Each structure stands twice: as C-alpha cells, then as structure tokens.
Length: 366
Image 1: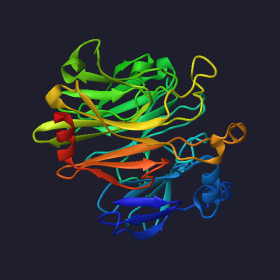
Image 2: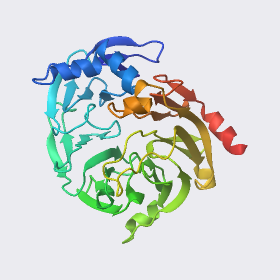
Image 3: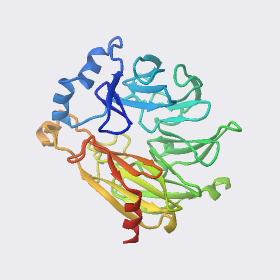
C-alpha cells in the first residue's frame, strides 16, 4: 500500500503498518513557494480549513521498485521505491495542482502510458509513453480535438488501451488503442453520454458513468464487446445517478463479475456547460455496485458520504474562495473485496474502508 500526506510518501502492507519512504521534490524554479503552501504543514492545513481537503500529489507503482509521482505540472520518477526522485517530464503549464487524474496512468508489459490533463482550451493534451518505467517519455499520441485526458486503462482481456476524454460534446470520446497491431480508433463520442472518467472493463462489456456535473441525470452505460466490431457501437443505459460518476472497480465474486462506481460531489460550475450557472446536482458521493449475474441491471447502493464542512461553504466566503470537491477512490483486490478511499468527506476521510466480497453478494440477494 502506498499513501501520501502532503509530499511525504509512506508504504507498507496495510494502513496500520505504513512507514515513511521519502518525499516528492518541491523545489521547481518559480513554483517552490506554491508547492510548499499546497503540500506542507501547517499551510495545507490552513487552506483545507478554508476550502476543504484537496489532493495535491498522485503516486503510482509501475514495477516492483519504480514509482511515479505527479505534483503540479511535473512528473517524477523513483527507481528505488520512493527514496530518491528525479523530474522526468514537464506537463502543460495549465495542468492542475496534482498534474493528471489518478486514473490517467496505465502499465503494460513493456510500456507505461500517461494521459495529460491541461485546463486551458488552447493546449493540446498528449498520450505519453515510457519504455524505462517512467524515467524518460515520448509522445505516443496528440489529441487536438479534446480538452484533456480523463483515463488511460489497460484491458485485462486483450492487448489494448482504453482512453477517455472530455469535456464539451465533441470532445467527449472513448478510444481503443490496439497495441499489438498499432491501431487507434474512436469507439464513440460527440455527446455527454460519452463523457466518462474511469471505465469498468468486464469480459463481455465496457461500462462507464457520465461525468457531467450540470446534467440532471448521469447515466451508467453498458456497451457489449460484441458491438465493438460494428460501424456504430451503441451502449445501453444500465442505471441512472444524480451526480457525476468518476471512479470504478471490477471484482470477481463466486464466478460473477462485480462492477462498482463512485460519484463525486462537485462544488463549482463547469466552465464547459452550455448555460452559465449550470452546477452540481447532488450533495452526496455514493458508491453503487452490480453483478454480471443480473447483466448489470440491478444496482445496489453500497454507501454514501456527505462533504466535509469548511469555511467556504458559507455563501459570503464562497464568493471569494473555492470549495473543494469530495471523491471516493475505488480499488478491488481478488479474494479481499472492494476498497474505498473517501476524500474530503465528513466520515472516513483519508481512511481505507474494506467491503468484503461476501457483502456485495449478500446485498444483491436482499
């Protein structure tokens, strides 16, 4: 298990046995002071009391010894489990504080891929590739037609990458990259129905939830793999939720595949919304799950979280200070179950919450 607090990295077999490994660098010319305020005590604590908890660092394990971390517009590589780091690539200047989304790194047998997340509409996001575990990078693909990359995922059932992008209608796209044949194709796009963050990849289908904060309903879609060979793949609606869907996990339980999705509490307006003032639709982050045994037609709510309170919740303060989103990060481990990592929530914030696999099946039986 890897964990961070500010720029400090911890590792261990579980959350009770974490030990400090090292720190992600911060002394970037012109950005050292900003990164100190955003990541170091006591400054980050003061900011979080004002705006809520906000993520500033991502860390990924890409081999037994190699780690990657993003902070601001820089990606760092560690060859020794986090003890030493060096800057390996600079991201677009408009990248957010944590660089890229947590879902934007994928690892294959030979290559590590990273999808960029610039915020300016005049930047061209790239799919970067590294064949030395993230020490150096090349550009594998450019996306001039989209705003940024939401996720890059390996397909456990064939030799392919899946890539999601956003945010206006024409930029909402789902790509499949066949690495074996070096074929890159657009599976679908052109509306908010294709605006996804993290996909759920099952043996027979691709599932995702809409990431549209201004929509009154965010639909979960199921696209059978049999549709991928058709000229116009058409997904079917499997479920509806009131908030943007972000993260996913897939877990096998008693021969059935379980898919879990989590929604986010988004507090600000979407700058790409067609109408000014269109904003968040819900005040809870929920985790829902369904099974292939029901063809993903029956969905159960696993849990829900309210956003942690902060000073910018007050209308007077909110006019001059931002208000952080709340998330529930997801992970599935065979034989162990579903793991939740709520963030900026009133309860369980920063904890690892385990949902045993047996509980999922019991909930569905009820």
